[in-house]
Length: 381
Image (cartoon, rainbow, N blue to C red; front, side, top):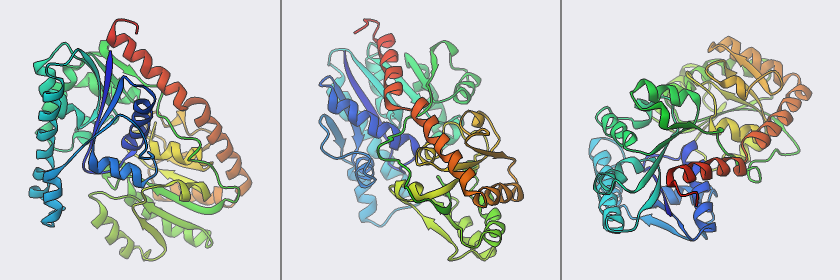
């Protein structure tokens, strides 16, 4: 059965986009029966971050004329820009209907906006096989706008299988009324170990990276930074990412007198920073497992300070880092203790990379997906 992977998102480049964009592109490039459908703006972001090479075969890049119109008109934020970009989704849905409405039965693997784009096809051709990946245990936060949540849930209910990134994701989906029988839990995430490697010379850098949203707790990190810099003056702190909390981050930098002392902004490729960093800080409110940025940092040989929530212990234990309560003083003291013990910090980093290599390899994740595809196909082919 032919396979079509649909990865759509026109708002950012997060962990799911990095992980699955690279994986789907490689799958399409290596299999004549697999096609990746992706919107052009996301593909360009993956190229800029060197996640894909641009030489991959069987990639259908969907043009975004209305999104380009919004940019041409200078509309980057607000309701008009949002709706113009989302109208491109309607165009995508029409294109997929034209291509697949009368096509032989296919297997579709959907991620993020792919749920909306393929939904009309699901209704017209219920014989197509559908699997959807859910990458966030907070489905409402993943969807973003309240009106879209019932639509997303309706699409999930019509899928043959749901691929949940973690047990926390499964729990949230079951709570929302979705059948536990068709939900499978992945072995975690997958990291490109060739791209994310430790630099031989580590620096006393402390990195926080992620979308600037409440779930990630970027403001909590900034509250800990003054104590860290006072205790370890030669350390360097990074807060990398974009998101709706950017104005609050800017105000916190001024309030805490950190302007110029903390490097901020969005990096398309985190590897150059993570490879040199000694420490990564992950402060998610619900669960740090299996955060893509955290896994990439661990692959780069960083030790970790993380909030002790959810399944975080599966990645951060006494051999790879320190788990703390979401308290600025605890965060600061954990970071300081590791920066002042670089040999211990490096041991944690080496163990962290081994853990990622053992549990989050591409081979292991692809084997998991192939098993799901076989189950959904029902033919064993």
